[in-house]
Amino acid sequence: MNQQSPQPDVNNNAIKPIVVGLLGYGTVGRGTHTILLRNAKEIARRAGRHIEIKSAAVRNTKRDTAGPINLTTDHQEIISDPEIDIICELMGGTEQAYSLIKQAILSGKHVVTANKALIAIHGNELFSLAHERGVMIAFEPAVAGGIPVIKAIREGLTGNTIEWLAGIINGTGNFIMTEMRDKGADFSSVLEQAQALGYAEADPTFDVEGIDAAHKLSILASLAFGIPLQFEKVYTEGISRISQEDVLYAEELGYRIKHLGIAKRSNNGIEMRVHPTLIPHRRLIANVDGVMNAVLVKGDAVGPTLYYGAGAGAEATGSAVVADLVDVVRTLTADPEHRVPHLAFQPDALSDLPICNIEDIATSYYIRLLASDEVGVLADITRILCDNGISLESIIQKEAHQTSVTQSVPVVMLTHEVKEAQLNKAIKQLATLTTIDSNIYRIRVETLATN
Ligand code: HSE
Image (cartoon, rainbow, N blue to C red):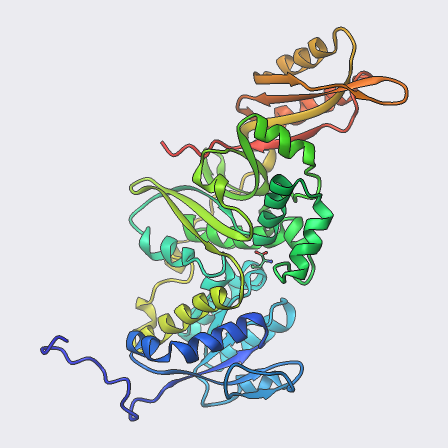
């Protein structure tokens, strides 16, 4: 130990512990409590103070807890308890959580929250209120569970102009895509499995339709580019239309389908989009399987950086909650003006860069359609693509499907980069051909090249 600068004696009873009140005591609350008890000494050595959970507001006070705490069904009791320094919101949902957090801020309490929907939707207002009142809102557990990606972007990459980021930020969706590929399982049976394992959101459409990922992406984009939270502008497309065929054809072409959240600086502004994406199978992120999450961030100075880990789960998410608690404790004595800003950039330095419309993005596409097995059909397809300035990287005609009346063949194409508006126009024209089934599937392709 350094003799010159004695460390605070965290075992000294004179140093008052930091007292935490939980709103919600579910999976993450229990995980957080377990960590705080098990690693109490290590955490106190880091924070300089002991951190103790005093009480939790729950729906049913009969439940078991990881250690001794008071349970109450009255949320107000926690908010108005003068002994509680930090409110930890782990209840989820937006309406009640929003009103409770607002009250906590107005009572001068710091807040730690795992609630991505709340931050994505009400974050701008809550951060501004917290700034005014000199309290902190920490939200590391809201994105990618236990991965410290918020801290990495907000603090570790401050020297960079961030060019883009791409993340697998919903474990349930990634679990579904992985099982479809590895086990040939169909979408709905894997979803049931994910629900049984407790990964899925209360409303699983939030996972499979990309809403949960869009909440998280809007948070990451704000931290990366210094823009206000704009969840409502994220283009969001789910994975429920991905078929076994697409998974197999993608593999044949050397790609994997992942449900990605992508945020990118482009000439038109900022792109924020969540959709199934073909990525080259050799990329590290293409090999992130099961419920694991990963975020790839490209900075102009550091180059590509990849953050990988558990995106959900009791102790994994609890790990991020505890990290936030320690962060809050460490800065309690700091002048509020000199704390790390909530969205990485100083609140008065956020930029009003426009958010791109999905039709303005440019990328490559995988297209799958069903065509009659007749002379000239492929020529018609390529002519329409050519007329719309779309160049093909490859075109494959698969084995014929025999229907009761006609024989049809799946045709799979990969395009070169093209503006989405042009592709949409071409798809509309293709759908008018009598020799083509009007259900034309397309999946965006991203190379995620880092040079
Ligand atoms: N439902 C979310 C997921 C939980 O599957 O990733 C963590 O946010």
